[in-house]
Image (cartoon, rainbow, N blue to C red):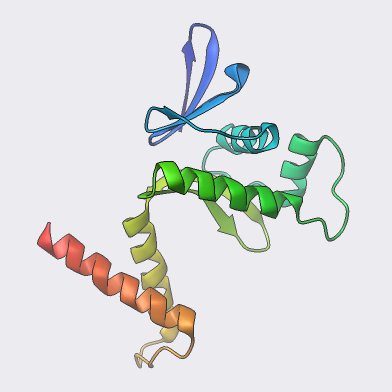
Length: 155
């Protein structure tokens, strides 16, 4: 994540993602992203805090300008919308990461690598006796790990 001056304009970068808050613009891989005002503000606030977990309540306050009410899921809804739009433009990248119970973090990661890391965590959670995965999510992560290892071996 880099903040640079470009014609006196703040530019926030994460991999191929650029956010230009003063110009109300975000670009993915050089192409302009069509974002609502709130989506852009949410992305900007995450980009201003690279690699830092930002609490949902803090994001709500920064983007909506008021205190979040209990049970309000607005941040989650807008994060979901942002993820969809970012994946449409840059499907191989993952930018917004969920930290359950804490908040969200922005950093650019290639999807295969992110999937392999999730799979390793799942394999470690299974324990030393290599139990068979018991849930659908464990099985999915195991498959991701095998395909990521294959891709790394071929390259």
